[in-house]
Image (cartoon, rainbow, N blue to C red; front, side, top):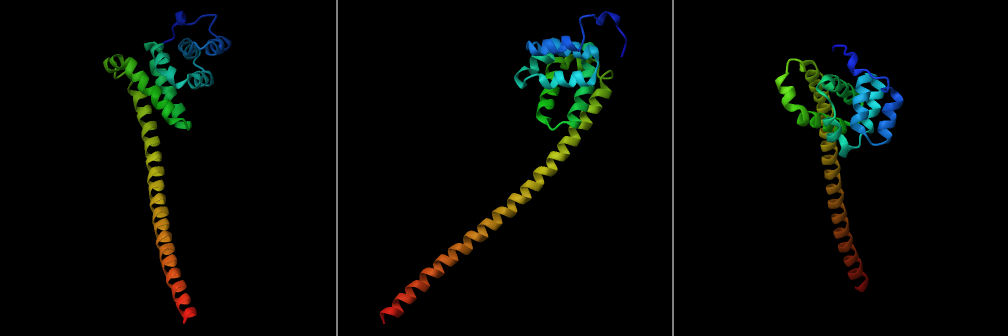
Length: 171
């Protein structure tokens, strides 16, 4: 990362980021948060963007902040339960900046590796949970079928016993 004093402005501070977020200017808020480069402010800003506004906010990210945002997203996704939200962010950035990212692959290699590692860990965790749920559902289904069969046998056996008792009483 190269220091660029032109990117600094006196009006870019945490309060300005918060005002932009409150006004619904998520792209501007994100650009300012990335200029400040403070993890907490960037996280609040990213998570403050509504899902339907992610694509628009991703469009507001300039190439000078793209690598940093990808790194932030990898870290945020790693520690957040909001996997889909962060995957939507990644997808929006790839859709919006894909050509630039493809032309400068070497520059973004570290960010791509971090993102890939995080996504792979989340995928493996979710796959394990889904497998366990699948096995549990299969077990519950078998238990239910066994109970239904037992109830059918009891009701069929109970009806035969009642008929036999009636026949015996009539004799």
